[in-house]
Length: 164
Image (cartoon, rainbow, N blue to C red; front, side, top):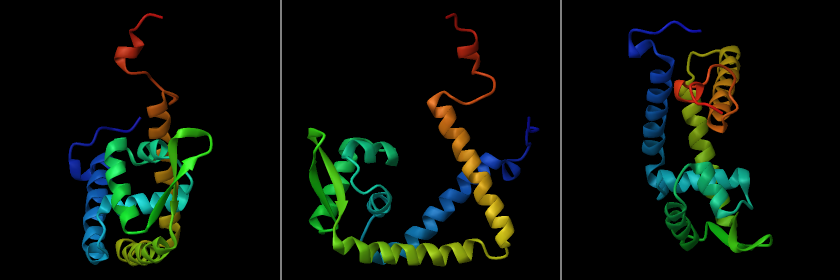
């Protein structure tokens, strides 16, 4: 088990959180002229990976409420960037697809992300970057397993003391 860190500046969790905040802020600054909010470009980015997903599934992946997602989708649909189609498996659900106009926006977002990657990783070797990616994937996997209740290791005190 890792030793406790006295200073937040040396805490992995603090650094991950603060780094993510700074990345979001820098990307927002770079993407200001796109005419999209961070939430809207995140919807487009996720749809580029999970095209055909239904609205409930996308809301879950984005970790937002479905009604909040609907507002973003309404705006993106009005800009002809996405379309909703009936879900063949569920008459009440809608699946989501990118429109051709979204590809240009996504190309711009990818270019901004590449610029940021170069700036953020300046001075970091390709080997260290690959190791960082591996470590972050492991951390993300640990968090996903914990959220699903399948993480190894000690259970929280409240669960450990509960009778079955």
